[in-house]
Image (cartoon, rainbow, N blue to C red; front, side, top):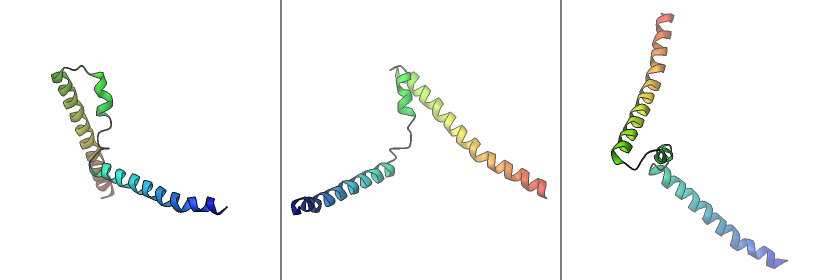
Length: 88
């Protein structure tokens, strides 16, 4: 029965090393912006290998995303202004 217990003295530190490695890899990937653009690579298969059409589509997608971000930032500000005007 003591042989079974001795295995845990080896397995627990090995498991802790693997968990530590997984956490370190996760923080490295977040720090290096690996999760920033998840949609672009999925849509790459929809375009031809022609570089100019591909670049044009990527530029349009980026402009659309930027416009959406700007609209998302502006909407709460205008709503707050309207509330301030009505309460004054």
